Image (cartoon, rainbow, N blue to C red; front, side, top):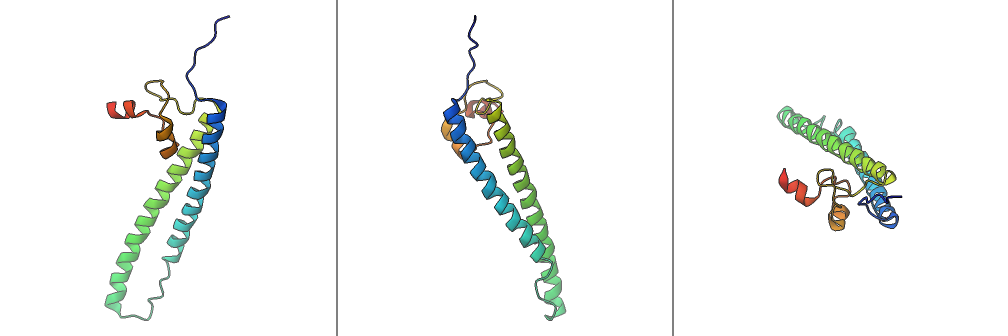
Length: 126
């Protein structure tokens, strides 16, 4: 019987990464709620009784902050999706394996960017 020689992190390592990612997902979801509530509060800034010229300026900045909040929310949702995909890779025991080189991604890189799918080597090749 030939032993399949696969490169992967140990179950103990995967368990550690899983906890790290779950913590990051929780924090990211809390941040997303804050962004969304800020977006909702932008609708009424309590400037109804101020001068019309200031009001026009205010409305312009509200539109800008809505766009900024919208972009932040989109990025945050993508980050959460990437983290959830990393959890799936942990379940499949493919987490931490570079999708280009097939080598293990450095542990320190994964701690900083837990949803990484490329090693630094592969990232530099891009």
